[in-house]
Amino acid sequence: MTNFNEADAAAALARADVLLQQRDLVQAAEAYHEAVWVGAAADRCAAGRWTLAMLEGNFEAAWQQSDAIRRRGEPDAHRFWNGESIDGSQVMVRCLHGLGDSVQMLRYLPALQERCRQVVVEVPPRLLPLARCFQGVDCAITWGEGAPANPPAWNVQVEVMELPYLFRSTVADLPLKQNYLQPPFALCDELASRMGTAKMPRVGVVWAASEWDATRWLPMKCLERLLAVQGVEFWNLQGGKQHAMGKQSAAVAGVRDADDFGAGLLPLSSVIANLDLVITVDTLVAHLAGAIGKPAWILLQAQADWRWMHLRTDTPWYPTLQLWRQPLQGDWDALTTEVCAALQAWLQERSDVRTD
Image (cartoon, rainbow, N blue to C red; front, side, top):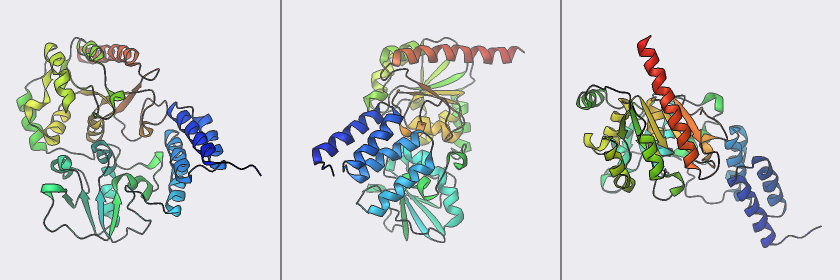
């Protein structure tokens, strides 16, 4: 019998991870099989296989990997649910991942509500004002200074990203595919009045994701090319430090700023509800648009996140979203050229409809 050491296992796992990152799914699957054989960490291999399965849209295979990880019982700060029944329980849903992750998975709250006595959602402070706008929320709380003095009781807890696993979802049965987030009608109407009558189609733009992942930042030259498309009333939906970086380019192009209508996710979502289209990189606004049911184009890197699957131009998570992918990792220039041409065609189609 051949003996393998830790170095062999680490090398085999590293090779599998690289192939997965390069989206060579067939070779990556074989590499993870080899990594398991030479003694690589079982949970790490299972996590890689989980990602492979999700990229392929094979959720059932992903849950098998989740089952194996749970059986081994290694500690994980992001795993709260231990497999117990939720029926008739008081459930605490903890949102400890990114804001976009939370918006995507809070679609499961009505399904929880049908089976549980009470559903409490613990969200980051920034998300709290919007949390009550999701269907299925009995109670929404946060942590830090805004935490309640007497938190609601619970007897089962689950991290929000565990909900698809808890329900053993498949691509065919994802719940509440659109319109499960409804900003207050009064605020949407108020902002519609303040935004004024549109003379051209209104298109919201986000060019940069969170600061920790610069691979999801659209270069300024690509942003300027997009904003140069004529016949559009562009809206700046960008937040964070990137807002200041791109604001000068946006101002030169005459872009209107969503921040002028209030800070926070509640007014931002209400502005999105009053747009015709959103064009954004892979970040929170993509999920807000999809949850509201607003048409949106998502600009993805070639090595896009598992939730967007592999090579698809649509997504079962959000029927109103269209996916645009870099032809090669880092090639925003080619992608922007394609999107600008598509935007001009979209404008022409709208013009043709109006003149018919």
